[in-house]
Image 1 (tube, rainbow, N blue to C red):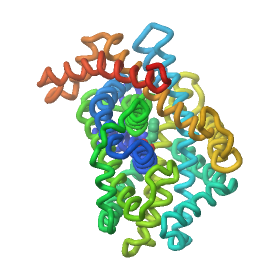
Image 2: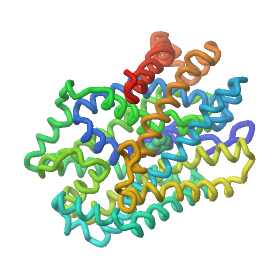
Image 3: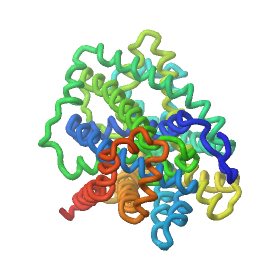
Length: 456
Ligand code: PHE
């Protein structure tokens, strides 16, 4: 990172931003959450709605969020304060900070499981669980063990705190430049292996032959929530990363890059997992444990599988880390900028509070397994509130703000700056973007939210 005129850090290049933003976007959302949601929501029909949500709503809102960040060079709350004199808009930024906090708590539980699986892989335990059923049993035993799940949750949270504490740019940027391509390569190897299994074609048809009668309000809400979750949208992470951008960088093309990379990894991960699920006659709707049951089975069948399973879970942990860092960074940036806290203090306090909040999520799979609120355990409830409510609501207001509240001439000049060859040259692109932000995104999000709480 270099510094701007006022001494604030900036990305070294457009590529640096794309990698960091893609690092935030690509994570457990693609490899853990997307396949299990697709499995619970009917496969191809879900994927169809998901991809539609990413392109029709996700990318336009992503452009809007980055633009707010780049224009103001501030954290989510500070950004709305700078752009509006109303007391209410900064509340939207505050809601984002809160959402980041909640996501970090349950996300770190799953990241902790992944970290624990690195150790399982090193121990060679995968070879004992090559059939998904016994792998599932093994997984349940592990997450049922309080020491194991809370221990790895704590270890992972400490890892996140260390990175944010010592600097995102050097550690994470450098690390993700190596690990992201490695993860990509490994997923492709696993996918090829999955495809080579007998009976894998049933998995492909599950993923790519949509049964449109399966689409209902619940499926659309899950797909929309997942689009926001996977693109790290609606809570200010992309706004914060955008605040380190230089004026001359092209926002629309960066946004499209991030979305395309993110969606490709999700789809490829889906192929890797569902080919195994169908080749081994498993049911696709087992929920959050899905990848932990299927991956060991496929990884151990690859020649040299032992080393691949270790590498795969290391890469998964690092992909998760580039995402949790962006979550903790939003909370930290807020307290450092707005409350004038020392970075150190913000990281230690909020990392610790997040860890405490993560514990009931980790215990949702053992001690609290039977305590349900609205039919969900604590983990499921925090996941639902953050991803399916807070992120879409955040996205709704970001679209309204950029579409209706912010001065139109400034918005246009802003988004064209750096994008003279696309938004500047083709007015229809600019106008389509504005129409999506003004009407399509808010109306769709609103309808989806209403239908999910049963009003329509
Ligand atoms: N996008 C990340 C993932 O898919 C999760 C995330 C959500 C990160 C929101 C930051 C903000 O894993």
